[in-house]
Length: 619
Image (cartoon, rainbow, N blue to C red; front, side, top):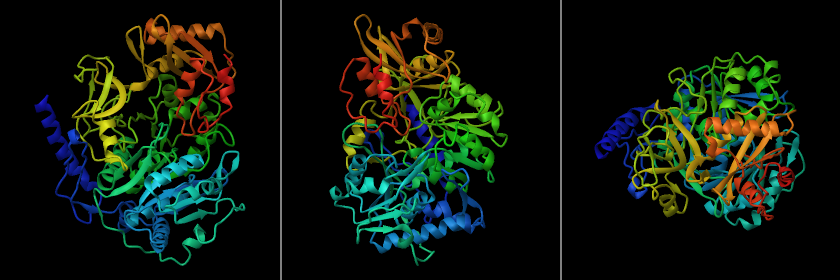
């Protein structure tokens, strides 16, 4: 084991020494990996000097590509879109960078960005990176309280927001008003910059608040990029859905940029001239890594989308792919399930022949939606890259590589070159047996790895390095099949123990989803007098399908066939929808309380659609 790890370390050093040169350095590194998992210390390219904004914009212009389209902004209104070239992007970033410096934002200062998917959000991120400020992006649909907690945890000096958000039928999401509710409780905020997105009237506090267009007026369109050490912080991003104090994941500059550039090109087989579209929001790590830093560092042309997949109808995604001739499409299984539920007629109205690669992110994709995605959207011609990674990993760790990896629906397949995972049992011993679920760990560091929890390094050590010393503990369960393919079974705290059998919730949900008529399922464990823990399934059905005993029987038969009789749910409850956060994450805490007949459901303010609670309570 020791010798194997030494070999992996040597391979890792050589591999990343070469890949590190894919970006431009003001001072090239001589050191590569000086990380030590046993101490919770991560360090890459530590004597290298660079700038992330320069790598995402300037270097492409210097190569003669200033007129290349960087961003194709598609607004909520299907009739409105605009293109921004790399030169135009640089002009806007430099102007905003100069304005930030004028209000005394300096290297190391924290800046909060609370915005929807508009070009100014990306400009703000790149401007912070240009002058060495640390951006903290807060998802634009988060509540005032969530915004307050994140601003105060990192002591942000400025807030960048917009008057109103526009998404789907919601034309007046009061973002500036949401911020105003809590700014008196955020003493570190000195200035608030506001994009006038909707032209609606808002309150502007004299001396503190300033509109974006006034802020950048008359600013020079040149700004020298700050020279940043590879280990200087680039951003803080707070993980969603956690209880208690928000956890600020901190990523640094050099390793993160190398890793996002590498994985964006490798996983999506990105070639110059391709039109790339990731449907994520910049409020999540997917938006940071695969909308901003990965694609732009590679000189990509990409779509960014302000709207939602069901406005003005359920064909919106497919209409955008046709309109902008998208070649690479990256979205979440939760969106695919919602669209699949509406039938095949929507995508079949549009010409999707431009597509070359399809991707999924956010959770393990289950077989029914994988096959629908492959056969209906990709017309059985496009490889699907089912990507596994986390906010903490910075980028994709396990994924197929297009046209190289033989696909298995529902499997993340193999680790990328330079990544060394293992499956451990409860005694921290490596599981050699095929198809036996254990804890997924990564045995060697990689450049995109988070460096710490902002302001609480001990929490970083306790969370990621104490459970399996000498490894990064992912918190996910997984198994490797007889062909060496990795299957992610879900969070280890989502693992059920039924009569001594360890069963991943994702496995059960996948088996339920394979039954005819099922659109989506979520399962949780509940106290069972016979088995100790029983399986309670909440199931939504396809549009036009009514609950029946026949469907229940089909579900039970499907689970028994795919997993085994021991995994059959004890209770199946048909519901109109599942309780999800605005990012699409199912709030299992609420489902568990309902299954246990608890009346106090706790805080439901972060639900995307609180009305689903009524359906859930009707047993």
